[in-house]
Image (cartoon, rainbow, N blue to C red; front, top):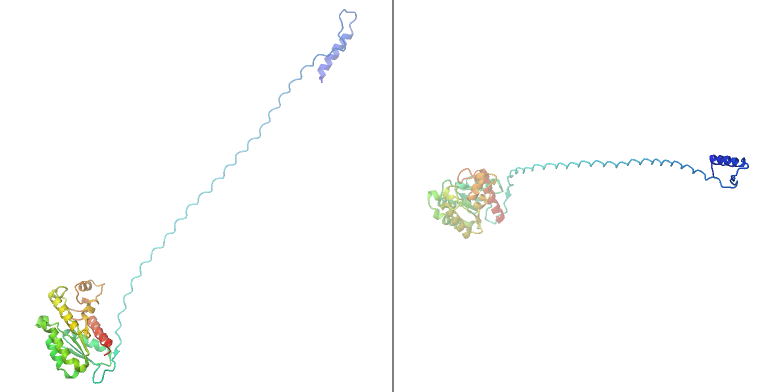
Length: 294
């Protein structure tokens, strides 16, 4: 399709061809084809569409802050150890009633000894009921002197006899006669009292010769072994029981225990009892008699 300018030009050309006469030139045929149309102008290219701006990248969400770790719980301090309660004082044992003795025999007790037995007698009296305790102690007496008094006392022949002597024989002489002196007491009193005899072991003193391994110590151990062998049913090993009653919280008691001697907490000098020692010795004698059923 031609545009307006091309059509107008063609009309002008056609009209000018029709007015010339007689000229020798041959008029162009009316039917000749019109000149080629001018090429249509190249349309300006449409501007490239402005690309839509790329969307801004969505920022990655900031990571949630890592919570600080909870502090480890502070352990509760270990409770201080509860101190062991102080041991309650041992109450005085209740008096033990005497059983009815056989006909002609007495439930009373005669305690024969030296200065060791002086405080034991009243403590023994305090823990027996229905009995009389005779104090046959002789201060600074040897086993021979004790035997003479025991066998000559007619008023106590039917009583239970407790014999605890020989400690003065180291200083006054006659240590070799302790066993024979005690045997004489037993042989003279046992038949009349129904063989109710208590022979208590000798004590070793807290002096160099009396400690474990010393000469006096070895002699005491030998005498006690002989008495136990001769009178196994009448023998009371009070020495071992007293040595074992040391207080481990007292340094001197521990030393005494290692030396195999009665602890200082039970005596006031090298061998004589304080109240704690004499009361415990009395309990040992009482318990022995009760266990025999006398």
